[in-house]
Image (cartoon, rainbow, N blue to C red; front, side):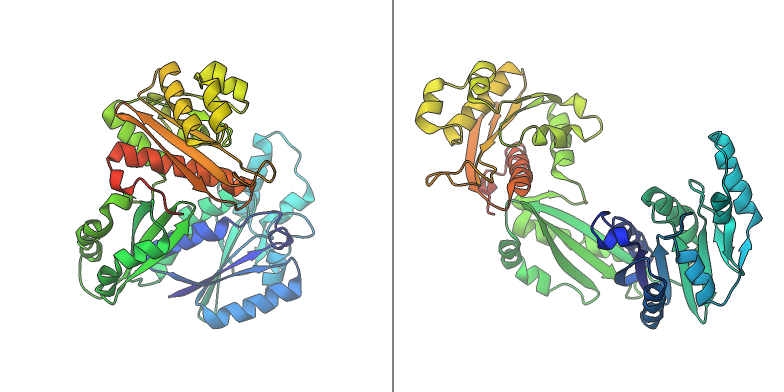
Length: 421
């Protein structure tokens, strides 16, 4: 069953708003066995919305639109749909009462434009929006289902979960699609592909492998479609031991979990405390670690030592080390990590120092020269990496790289400790 997603709004085309709605819808629909064939973004122009609807219904039996359901003049979706299907707008009394209740709850006057939120094309099956004033709409026409939802992400997600997904499951006989994700780090996409090419070639025809690279890691996604046999997911899981034999030292999770979650779990298991000493990352490593609920159980704190004086005073970095090797050096980050471990009173400490750019580089140390270190009870390891993809990406990659180094030391994958970019 093919589905098309259509996002409506000039703000998406101008890049003023990032489309996170499509990603959420794609994930949820895929779990039901619905394949998203295309995602289209359309401006707030009636003729372009109509043209997009005409094209979409040639490709898909289910069309989901988001956006354009607000109370202002640029919100055209409801009016365009009414004209598209040749229907009048009529008042939906339950929605009107819901909108009135919202305004009463916040003790605000209700304007006529707010009342218009309760107007829907005649014959529409209204989808209750529990957290907003614009209802969703379900319209069936000539064998195609059109579903319209608000573009506000939290409203769309609630409508998808409460209304849309259950109705789709009830209406269609859907064959399940199963996804299994394996998270890897420390080896690039092409290197991984080479190591597992025989395993990939032997996959059953109904199971496909996708490589999804990101900064410093590659997500391997197995997608299985129903072949009429039972226990699809179990049969997919049975493929993983052979994968582990080939790349086990690069696998940090067999679910879609980020590194900060995985290292936190290992630290809790070991009952170890972690600290960070950051220069070029400016606290980005600590921010990722503390983004995990419950991280206070294993994270002690961080020192952002941007200036060399701070590196010396708070972390105990030797002035001679800085003079001889410079702030961006393996020697310096090793002393930063060891100093953080001692002064923060933690079992493990990470350190970063580098030239994030766009300026500050030299012939010997160009922009993108990054040094990282990890100090543990068994010793300190350090690495120099080189990446120049713009300041923000350099910082993000450094944070990822030092978390990879931490995971490798915690998990005992010494043979995988050299990062390959």
